[in-house]
Image (cartoon, rainbow, N blue to C red; front, side, top):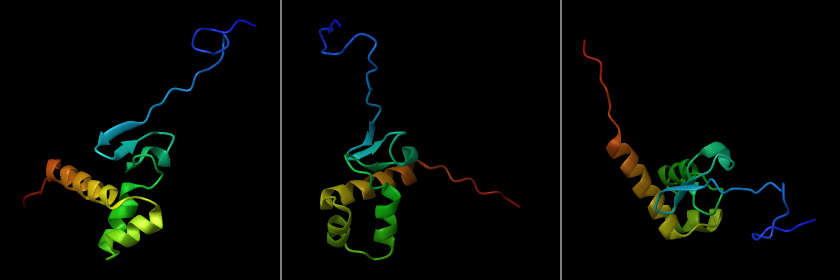
Length: 94
């Protein structure tokens, strides 16, 4: 069988990367956690880190428990702040 210049055999399916970095250190990939935003390079959802912070867990404990860095935790907070800042809240008047 012939081998193509990219090292693949003809007809062989190539797996394309569809991970998108939507903010520094924050990524989405439909194959990871159903496309939820996660800390880039992990399967740790942004929402989990935010829930832990809201519960009073320290940045150091979160980093240790989930295998992320303090900078990753800060990136989650920055991302959440950007999302909230861009949100339009509609209030119905009486």
